[in-house]
Image (tube, helix red, strand yellow):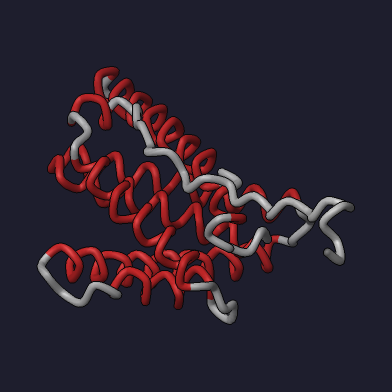
Length: 198
């Protein structure tokens, strides 16, 4: 393999690791699990990683062949990470293959739903498109409040716009700046002893 091609592949792989790592860190922000009510579980955290990786890949695809190549590398890094995590948790070889296949199917299904929702919202479609997609794919059997859904949907729309505004050179080099996650929800203060029963 020519040295230049090998170097390019190495550079793309390094950028993919940076982007995926940034997506994972953002997906772990506490506000998603408090303010937005996402389940703080393996499934909930997987879904938040999927959401952020989808938004990154969507932005990368705007930059033609280099963006497509890097988006594929991010996908590969993500599922290498999922494979390794399953093995480290004690899942055997046969089980890992089935789990990773199911996760990939879930990833593609969610990406399609989010893409349709963003397109509908962006072309004057039904305002609840993104909230409906999030309700199905992030919350599942949960029953989030309207405020929780609205907070997460607003974040997704704003992040999609912000990523579209990133310079091509920055993104293709593996540098991404996420907008702040929704603020952490704080519990209401407990009533003071003096006010109890007053």
